Image (cartoon, rainbow, N blue to C red; front, side):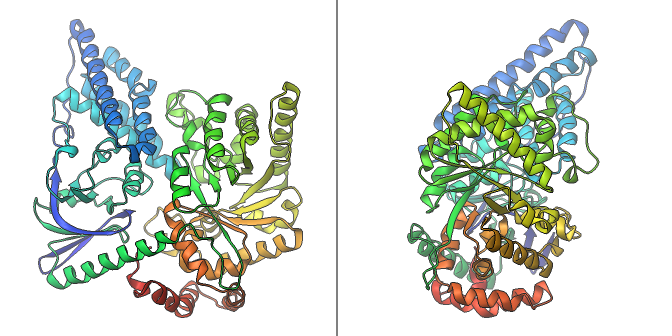
Length: 596
């Protein structure tokens, strides 16, 4: 999407990493692998074709290994992403099936690989989980590496760029992004990619502005064009007019001043002006991310997503493999709590692209999370044993996702008790008093919260799914995404109900969805009586800073007031009118000028 103002062109993409940079464009040329020819290989040369394919894979493997070895120490925490690409290079689906097609259909290696990748992409496109959908980009990056070696195309040498520029690329793989030299590359934009891509994750680790999914950036932008990248809003401006340049330069300075201010105080507790302390914890999916949680003043892990350990494999992880990863996180964070969420996807599908699991017509409402785990008790019990064993090394909580009924909670706890009994019999140490909790992300769980509270120690509100299921809105659908709102009166009334149940029953009430990461929601969340928030590590400083500016008593009164308001827009205006001044005064910039 774009529009022109004179010579100025604006493109709207996906915000991958916040911040603003202004500079000259540098187009990254990666021609050579987009067009693949198909031809039949003579029978007598099939073995040579297979050898050619294997040699291309070997060269790609060596290239990724070399990048890992050259990765600077401060980016080592994301080397696991590149290690995943090494695994994909030898994945049976990619490697064996390509060879299979060469042998049986006599297609050339390039076409055989492109065919296999096309099938895998179609399979991932049907997945409901946005994180899993985004993993198809990793498969594309790996296949591009192999294809470039097959066709003899030159590799992109990001590390050799010797001037201060902003990269403009059709796509950047994690291995290419890892080569970015911060003293030269101010930011980057790409035609492809999404927020959950590993390229976006690395951009956040580098703390440089990035906008992905622009579709036509490489077609519109020319080398040395002056461009503005607004990573917070997901906007690229090409050839900006003078007034636009001045405005964005002011925003850039404001943003840097704002980040410096909140980062300086990130280790202070999130305590309101009237003495109420709200714990702010981190959401992670990789063990390596605990460093970022600690650096940003996190008081524990409120959501440890465990799906990553099941990805890019031909079989399920063993108990020891899971335990080893969990223990790493628990030991580093001890004595702070680590909340481990059990598998929140369809495990068969995660390893499926090796086993051919049947597709579901509506996977968001299908066999996933606790439903899948209860149907596959051996898979579930392997994870539960690993979690229990990790509990011997620190403060572990176990959390069950997508709970919709009391029976699911009881069955999950029964299996947990079975695992505990078995470990006790084997003499394996674990915490017998481990806390158990559930994600509140399905409307039925809200309605029967008083019943569920009898079985668990804590609720953690997963706002992303709760809002999606309550309002019947697919956030990935551009036609209806604007209707998705955490400030919808129906959502606030559900949260109010949960708050009352928690107070009455004594169950602890936490929140780990995206709603908790927006500082402008803090007056509402303080008014709800939550005990803990768990957010993206990068959001912690600003969330904590906002909490320190507020009065809990006033927030409670404010929350009662907005319960009487009947629309999201009115509630948003009320928050802005009531608390925008606090933000402006604290950070000395207009609230509209802050890029959270």
